[in-house]
Length: 308
Image 1 (cartoon, rainbow, N blue to C red):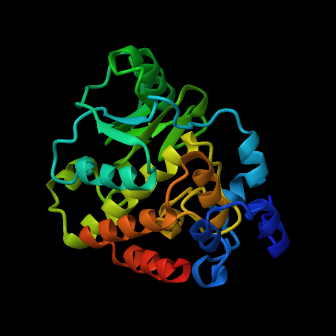
Image 2 (spheres, rainbow, N blue to C red):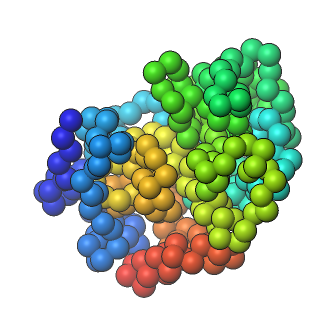
C-alpha cells in the first residue's frame, strides 16, 4: 500500500475550526507550525504506514467517536496496574514515568497500584525461551477486577509489564494495545531496552544500565505509555505530522516519535480535558529537564516562546 503525505489543505481540514479556542491554544495550533512540526516521511517497507492503511482522524471525526475517555463527575482517575516483576536493575522506573502521565493528561488523577503477578488465565507462548503473553487476557483481567479498585473514581485502567506481549496469531509483538470500549489497555516495556535485539534475556539482566541506555529506555517508556493512554482518550494514529500518536512497527519509528502532540491531536485532547496549554508545556518542560530529556525540554521551551 502507498502512503501519501497530507497536503496543507488536508491538514487544515483535519484541524477544523479553531476560532472558539482559548487564545493560547489557538496560538499553540497555528503559530510557527512549520518551525516546530515535521511532515510524516515516506515509510520504508517495514514501517507502520507501509503495512497499515491509516486514513487519519480529523477533529470532526474525533468528536463523533463514542468510545473515548472523558473525565466526568468523580470519574477522573487513571489507574496504572503493574503486572509481573519489575525487580531488576533495568526495569522501567514507574514512579518517575507516571509523573509525565499526570502532567500530560492534565485534570486527571494518576494512581500507581501495587504490583500483581500473572494469573493462570493469562495465555502465553514461548518466544526464544521467554514467555510472551496475549494482550486480550490482560484486558479481561482489568475488567474483571474493576470492582477491587474504586469504580466511582476510575476513568480508565492500564496494565504495564516487563514481559513481551502479542495481540494474536499472525503478530510477532506489539508495544501496547488498548481496548477503548472497556477503558483498559496493556503496555509492555520489554522491547524498549536497547539490548533487547542484541542479547538474550540472561545477558540483559547481567548488563549494567549505562546512562546512555537509561535515557533511551526512559524516553521510550514515557512515549509508549502516553501514546497508548492517548488511544483510550479516543486519539487514533496520526498521519498529519511527526507526532506522539504516529504508529510504530520498529525501534527507528518509535525513536522518531516525539514526546509531544501535533496541532490536530493536541486539539482533540484539549477538547476532552480543557487544559491550560501554557501551564502544561511549562510543567512538561520542567519534568523533561529534571530527568535528562534535553531535546524535549528545548522543544517545549521553544513552543512556549511562540504561544506567549
